[in-house]
Structures are given as C-alpha cells and as structure tokens.
Length: 249
Length: 269
Image (cartoon, rainbow over all chains, first blue to last red; front, side, top):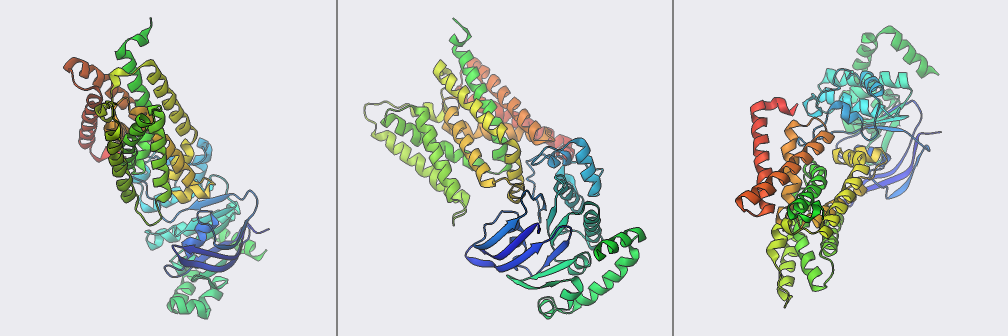
C-alpha cells in the first residue's frame, strides 16, 4: 500500500491555483525528489501532504496511522524563546534520553544536546531538525529544501546522511530541492513540478526529458552525470553494494 | 477570625494569584510577539466594565465576555486581508472609546474609572480572592495541559500540523487564557497595567533561562517578587499599589538587562 496517495489534487493559495490535478503516490522506502522553479508549488505540495493546507479538490489518502517526520524549509526560533537542542527534541512528544541520543547520532548531530538552538550553525541546525523528525520512527520523511543556506559540500553531506538513513531505517523520503544535481543523484524518482507534474521518473530520465530541459536548461544534465560519477567513487564500497542490492530488488 | 481578615494579606494573595497565571502566559505572549494583543484585550475590558455596570451584571463576567469576544474576533479576522496589528489597533481603541462613552451614559452611578484603569488591589475581598484564584488555576491548568502543543505551534505551525496538532486551535486556547487573565487581573493591577504583568516578568527571566519551562518558572518568581515588594513599598511610601508593583517589575527588568549586558553574549547561549 502507498504511504500517501494524491489523486487529482488542486490547491489554491490566496486566489491563485498553486497546484492543479496532481497525481502522486509515495511507496515505502523510496526517495522521491520534487524539483521545479520558484513558485512552482513545491512547498505547497509538501504542506498539503502534512495537512497544513486543505486541497480545493482531489483527495489525499494517507496510510492509516502513518508516521511522518517533517523537516521544514526554515525554522525561525524567536530569540526570546530559550530552547536547548535536547528540549527541542521533546516536541511535540517527550523522548527518553537514550532515544534523543540515538536520533542525534543518527542525524550526525551527536554532540549538540546541551547547546541552544540559536547558537547552532546552519548545517548543525538542519541536522537537529532531522534528528527530531527521526524520533517517532517515521515511515515517511518529508524535507522541504532542507539544505537551504548550506554550501555545496555541506548539502552533499546532508543528502548523503538522508540516503544512509533510508538504507538503515527503510523510511520513504519525499524532498524538495533547488540543488538539482546533488539531490537528483540521491533519488530513486524525480518529479518535475510547475503547478502540475511536468514529468517524472528516474533521475537520468527526467534530466533528459524535454519538459525538464525547458524549465532548467540543458546544463544541469552534464553536471548530474559528472556528480554521479564522482559520487560512486568517493563512496565506501560496502555501502554502494548494499544500496545497489536494494535497488535491484 | 483568620488570616484573610487582613486587607494586606488578601491583597498579597490576589497579587500572587495574578502573577502566577500571568507569568507562563506572558512567556507565550513574548515568544509569539503578541505583546500588543494583551494590551488590546485589556483596553477592551473597559467596555466590559461599562456594560456590566449598565446591565448591572457581575463585572468579572462582563469583562470576561468582552475580552473573549474581542480576542476571538481578532483571531478570526486576522489573515483575511488585515494585518494583525491593524486589527488590534482598530478593536482596542474603539472598544476603549465605546467603553468611555458608555460610562458617560451611566447616570446616577458614580463610576470610579481610576479603580479599573489602575486596579484597586487593597480593596480585594474574599469573593474577589476566590475569583482570582479560580481564574488563575483555570489558566494554569489550561496552559499546562496544552503546554507541549502550544510550544510546538509557537515554534512553527507546519511542525505542529505534521505532528497532528492544529495550531489554530492552540492559538484559540492561548486567546481564551489571555482573556481570562485580563478579567481576573483587572481588580489587581487594572486595565492599563495588565500588559506589564504579562510581559515584564517574562522579559526579565529570558537571559537566565535555558529552556521554555525554566523561563516560565523564573518569570513567575519575578512576578511574585514584584507583587510582594511592590505592595510593601506602596505601604511604606504611600504610593498606589498596582503601579508600585509594575514599577518594581520594571526595576527588576532593568537589573536583568544590565546583568545580560555584563555577562555579554554568553548569557544567550
């Protein structure tokens, strides 16, 4: 059964049609990336899936009892609100110290527990957001431009963490990103969005699709190939192997 | 026959009741940047006083009703083409104006408006005391019950939605609690100074708190200190009680701000 199934979904935002007739299903364990230009409805799509926006028409079917881990695009913590990393992990549900420690380690934020959220760097902050999202053992991890503000190596490392998490925890991942070549390399399926779904499929397929090229130009196709090439070499062998194995199943 | 026979004891207990409820609520008011919301609800309370006198109903009930109506309508109207501060400006001042006009129609009733603007804590009776503590306990119970959800929604509405929490509902809970605090505090510090009891203790506690809970507890401590000290000062120097309490709170805030500056940026981390 699909984790989330959207049928003919249309969403209006402030009188303008942000999404129209979107059909999409997320299957367990897959990494799906949504790409699209600014204002193409990427965040709207994710916010509708988590229930923050009501669709104007169409249906969203969620697997009963679906556990979602959500990593927002940007979380502004008001400077008047004191919040340690550890306390943040207790929202909305209290976590045991062992669970919190495990989630932080899993997300690569092991040493930050006692720090104030406001004192973290951009990359550290995103990893803490990720750790919090992992706490309820999500079946579906939703990330909205989670690497905004990170430099290229920083976001590459972040997406590597995501891919590793998927392999270890078996959760599906739905994410939005601008960084096409980095993100697409780590995806099973890419959805090119511009108010509606222009094209979708494997990263290579989408990168060469005329609809995608019309939106993003041809340059990124080359960068994608290059990145994938480097990626498979810098990877440790064990992991590449298990990843390939899983993909082949 | 008992401790409650002393007007000073009653005043102290009344002040502490308001301080304890206002402190955690004030933290949310500060965190959510809705300082003006507390003020606006308080201004609307004057209309509540006038209507209660005109209809000869219980003042607490009248104030609570008007504060609730105003808070609910502002919450509902916000995000429908008007900015929140515009709506608050419109409703707060018009409610205050209507309230003052309504008071002028009340013939034969000598209304001591000053008592409602600045409170009259020294005249708190046993009934008032029961009302204040009943309201405070209700507010504390409500905020305590919704604490985690309120914090999540305050941090980020989408984070709340993803966890199955409706941030609009939590906002409503906060609004309700705020109206209740205004209604019980009117006797103690008055309409014009309720905002101070919400915000100053929370702001004073901020530099020394590492978590939201500690900030709320410290704010309650600061507010209680202001009540105890302010009442003593008003007795010694024969100054009005409500303003004395707020003045002491402001002095505590100044000390806290100074300490923060001395400790430097370290205190924020």
